[in-house]
Length: 377
Image (cartoon, rainbow, N blue to C red; front, side, top):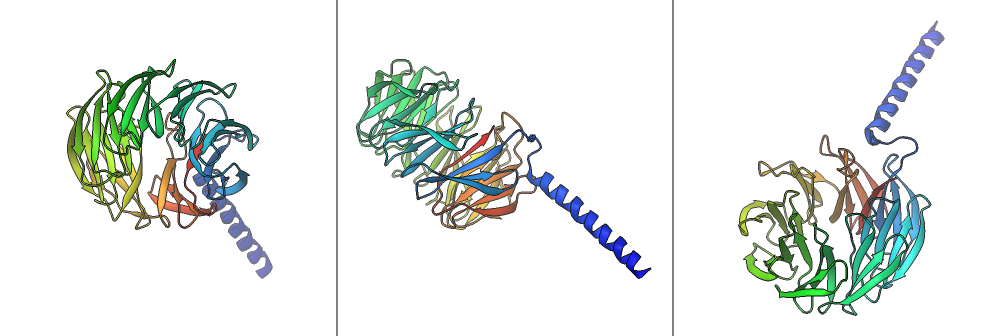
């Protein structure tokens, strides 16, 4: 009789363990995934590799050598490909996500830094900062379609939402050049704040905001008239800009001032200022602009921010020097369930559950991880 009772107890414990495991796996695995679908994160590390993390099982499944100084990673919207830049190698690379293989390295010139795709994904634009050139690449043939001269030290190229123009940020000449998207030929040059780094464009392609990480000012450019409208004073030097999807507000992160500032894009005025931790450095915004997550590098935490009501939620501990962040699923495909945070100093990927704003796990990915891409295929 005691043996029979023991067997029943062991059986019930085993059944409960199996049920708990099933619930845990369902909690971690995005509901959109079928057995033939894959959802991976790609994280660049200081040894010139990409660490691949399976976001269903939450484990590292591959490490792929790519090249030195990976300065950007982007997902191709229509093909199972990850595109990136090796700034030290002087090339753009293409990774086949299904095969986990580098299938192309496209020489573009010294010191390329970033990428931007056309809306249909048939072209990608980059710059060669050391040779002062803008380049267009055909994403199907992976051949260079054209080159054009820019200002001195072009560090970023962004296509306007209407797909008509390419805006190039020229750091050394402190200018924004406007190029025709079809021919790449320059149309206008606008002087902006010193040492600009980044540009953000409103959805109707009428206004651009130019940021410099060395200045506590923000240049506002009228793209239709190709003139500088204003230089807005900020609370401190910024590290990132995020445009609200409807274009009504621009959010600017400033670590040295410990704030998130809101810019009214219609009136070109600085509005609300929110105090956010020790050194907020990067952020990610939901597609409906209801919520933002801001990473505090100094404190190793992420703050949920209710954008509608301007309220800051309870901070979430994630790791040392959190930087790049992404949601697990494209918001055009499905509601994301996880937030991914790259911790540069602790060398891991933090996975947060959005439903509860809590940490699920930390996944070691390698030394000094910096760039992050996510691909569903």
